[in-house]
Amino acid sequence: MRNSLTRLGNITIVGLKSIQRNKMRSLLTALGVVIGVACVIVSVAIGAGVAQSVSEMINSLGSNYIMIMPGAATQGGARIFTGQSNLTEEDAEAIRREAPAVAYVSPQNRTAAQVVAAELNWSTQIFGVGVDWPFIRSWNVEEGGFFTDQDVRSGAKVAVLGKTVADNLFPAGDAVGSTLRIKNVPFKVVGVLEKKGGNMMGSDQDDVIVAPFTTVQKRLQGQGSRIGMIMVSAASAEQVSEAQDQIDALLRQRHRIPPGGDADFMMRSQEEIAQANQQQVGLMRNLLLGIAIVSLFVGGIGIMNIMLVSVTERTREIGIRMAIGARGRHVLLQFLFEAIVLSVFGGLIGILLGVGVATGFARIAKWPIVVSPMAIIVAFAVAATIGIFFGFYPARKAARLDPIDALRYE
Picture 1: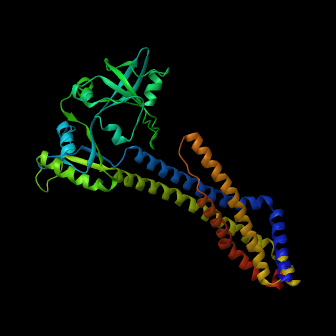
Picture 2: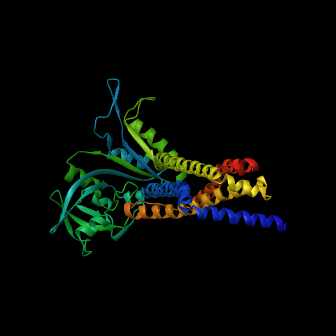
Picture 3: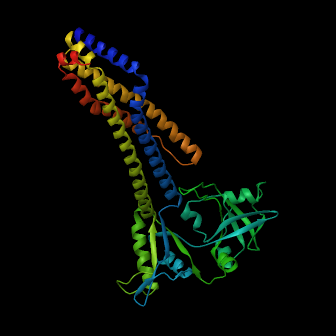
């Protein structure tokens, strides 16, 4: 036992001295592993950050959220999109009355305009919605209140501001009760929404003004009863699919679509939106991981190449060691130890570099990242495995050298 520990200690000392004698070569050998491990850390961090951001974005849409949008129509046997909405306020009211699985319904129109308040102005988007909109979007009012059903029916010129709009038009914090002008139409501010934050695409969700959809239709868009979209919230997460079936049957009946005919509307649920986005995130994550794996593989080949060169350079040294009693397995362990040390050393530097790059990237690009402890552990384990895998062949070659031939080597 004591002899084994002594031999192991000698192997460790000799291996470390060999690495120390060739500092620059050792550093360059480990560089491939450094880059590979750093790539793994960064790619996993970015992928996890994007996945978390997508999840937050989907959740920010609302509770049990379903969107009903205009779809293509069949004209002359061809499916075309006319560019005009075929959804009406009556459709929304019918869904509210006749779809038991639906809890909240809100029409929605959208436009953009330059908004003026006193000497300040701000370009933003205006949503025309119904009174159920805050419940569908799970978006509370921070100051003041939301407009009422009476405001919607009468087309009242009232508005609720997103936090970004309120801060830019009313920096003193006196938005509620003030007046602003949208396309030269005066609106009274009745409330300010709580801060929602940005979405995955970098858009500011708080850069918005919400007003009764009837007012937006008549005063800002000049259109009739057509609406751009119907927003729905199912009564529960388990009833989302049931709500979609009920809405589909109802709208097909109202729009006189024959059985088996193509619908002139589209529906997207919160779950469907999440699945579509997760697929895109998965593709991006796999691409980044592929690049990282290639980098690690290249780093492993670099280690094997340098170790083979080292075996050639130290052939005479190997012969002397064998001549004084070292066995093949001792030589194998020495060179394998050197390869593992280089890969583990490169793995440690790669982890530090990866965490640093990921953190710096998040601060500079304002991109969400999540540094996973599991990713760090896996990257470190992979680095050690690379040392064993790519270091075994050079170590085995060194161990199989004939002592006499090695001593004669010049």
